[in-house]
Image (tube, rainbow, N blue to C red; front, side):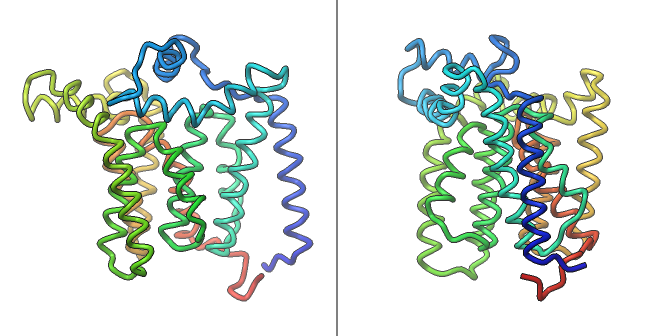
Length: 304
């Protein structure tokens, strides 16, 4: 099925109106769990001057800068939370249309991507957008250096996501089929992210090892991973959800590109060995890759 420009225009209008409705009924808070939110405690420590801008504090300062506009809207405007939802939905939709243009596919399953902000936090939504930006840049679908810098800037919201990007950058550099100029840019980004990530790595190592060495580090880290913690805590709905996406990620391995396979493998490893948003931020990208894998193509190769 071929979509002409008018069809695409109608779809864009529909999704815009859908965003308005969803924003009205589903306002997004920066800190949905209030003071119990660990992210709130990090930002509150910055605002109260309890953290110095060095070491691990640098990461927390960057995280504050990322969410500061949304925090401002929430605090200053009566409909600030609704505005946050609308902005996030519009950014998610840009990812949706970019993937549509890139893969030339459209499928009802892809609409899941647009609805995701309703079910997750604003922080998670931003990290999802960051994952799409980095994916599009590495697969050479976008050229903007400013946009990819924004993607890496947002990634600072989660140590797990930063680690994912370091791995993806390493794979990208090892591929060896990119221009020298782009290699320099990627290596520069790699260096900046890695240096900024060092304090967080040291903090995690000390936390998980607890003075017990390598075995204690691995045991504690895996036991707190998204998959195993869901099992140990009896949260079987979350467990089923992660296992489903692990299965979908395995599906992506069948006749996918080298890089898409790397993304799928990274999701599986992240879900099984780490806690937090490292794997969660890749959920929508896995959905997109699965839709491509199932070959739901309704745009022909000559579509514009």
